[in-house]
Image (cartoon, rainbow, N blue to C red; front, side, top):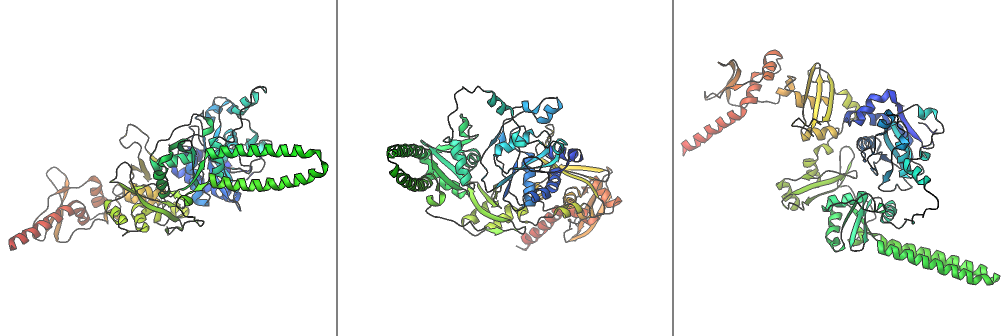
Length: 591
């Protein structure tokens, strides 16, 4: 950790030592991200010791945090520090491209926007990949605006060890330089403390866990991250405000629809705070009138020196009383919480509905009906405060939920089984790289297919290398969840997905031949294909199934499969049908 800069920052190693890992991190490789999170976690724990901190990922040149957000989430899993994705910016030229073409980074238009302010009791830790020019880090630290902001990166260049005068928060951006070059006689911009964005940020700093709704005229409006929540919950469109003082994102609905939409927001697990912009404007006018009256009173009492002290003392008392009264009125008029709307006041946090084996708390577990298709129901919940993606429910589960014959724990086991399974430690995950036959997994990567020429473009795939054998296939939803939730290991994934190609005995052990089979025969047909057939106890014979190349290798070369296992794999369905026909024939004959 270095404290030479005005902003404290921590770095794992110089950039040349982590170059390859940094490239993998930037490409979104999940294995690289997890490895980087393991390396950065210790330094961040030391940095955050004894403090209430939050992780703030830096957005990329497209405008939003992508791989840095995933990195922050992985660090959060290891340190317990929450992640706040509260920064965005306009798309701009990548800084590494500017440096490569001998362009000064200060010439790039870079201004980061803050969705919500970080309360003073929290200390933000800005998360980035590599600290190179420091230009992006400086813009992020300025945007956050917290006096104790810290920075954590994977790697750094030598400039940040030799330049002792380098200060992130004093690095002038292109926009600030233009503002400084404007003539001083130009009209000053009106104070914007009463803009919707300023009101939203002020209320958000007081109630960071609440969803802010502000009434302006005939509409209720929500901004920035709250606007996205309102849009997702109520299925209403979002739009980009025209004025800069109205935030980056906006969602609004008519005031008469509040009685319909407010219960939906509450059922989705949100805590809602309502503000009236018109009442705020009236309060500001009242404050100005009160101040003018005080000034006139002081002018009238200046004639008598003996009465001056008494008048000032009385006015001081009146000021305190007025400030307290106005503060109470503002709190009551502006911040109407959901507890007041529902007629309840809940001061204690909600108890979790269940606790997983990993110690994570499940809350807000509930089912809800689709607004577009009434026949579809979804189940969702929160895990340690993070909203899980809703899952489409089966009709029988919907009926059980409506009849209250099921509970949250049962639904969680059905729709989020990997969230409830015990997680493997990073040490266990790295150590379990050997197959059941002793072979070592040289490489295993989960990646997203980007080749538009392929049919599986956009899907996650599993790639592995065992010895000289290289294989890949599209991952199932079950395996993908198990991988990202860290409840499986490389050997289990490889054996499950590539057991046939690797001719593993563990793959063929799952096939059990049904009872009532008298004999199994492996033979070559007239076309030269190896086939398997079975003779039942009543001397009836099944059809001949052609063996695949992998099955022939496992049977004749590797000796990891038996003819009974192959018969079970190819003929169990046919054997079951033949036995069923025999039972039906007996019943019809007896009648």
